[in-house]
Length: 349
Image 1 (tube, rainbow, N blue to C red):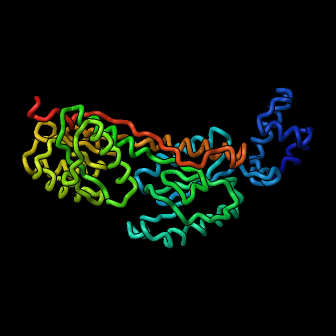
Image 2 (image 1 turned 120 degrees about the vertical axis):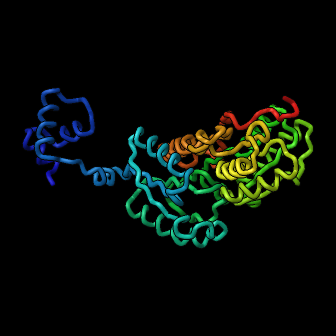
Image 3 (image 1 turned 180 degrees about the vertical axis):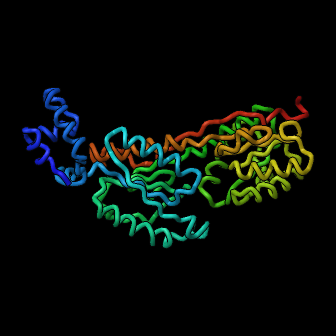
């Protein structure tokens, strides 16, 4: 590989002049700059950024470690984090732990499985001298297996961490549940079914708390009999909708769009017109929600915002030190997407 010194000799300039031109500095004449750039192009020279960064004691390289790249929430977070890093002169390296691919949902409450792949991954990124790590979780929970003596700045996206030792960015699920319930009530609904996820899931707990606050503010007692817990899948949405329909609810709020899809299937198979006979709302704003019939009212997750804030926080730590950022979880609000699946109940039309 040709070196800076060789380029300098060919152009009859100093190595520092070549370095300045490569790094975009303008303290050289246009004639010299063009001569050096022509030689660089002819020789195919490529700067050794890794060696340069090692001399400066930083690599301008951030590792993004994800639990599973196949999760619908992960890719937008990663893309936004990488975009922010690139705009600010940092490169990224992606590590995919493939947790769902390896163990489906059996690892949710077994941190030993996560630890078995996380620790080797963190050791690997340390060995290549990254400046920091952005960890992207597949679902929100309190992660406890990060090493207590981890020497690099670490940022957690889409989850929290034990003792808030590292900064984290999460969904504001409580406000999301609150906003959706307020909207359903504003449309005239009083008997509202709630199709929840797993009862011990943080998303479920936070969204349900927001619902209950909205009901309380409107003077509507929370009826636990109108809440059914499912498993986040379309098939559980179908069975949960079947149960809720028997209670005479005028609207069903599903805690994700997949379960809303199951509720749609139940309604269509049973001659129930969505919007007229029964209003249905979702959560997530999956791409399919805009093409369901009628188009699904739902909550859009701020995934790109979470990614950008995570990267911004990481760069702040690198520039100003870890003490420069707050390690309390930062909640980012969702956006209510009002479409066609929620109408006033028939009795009030």
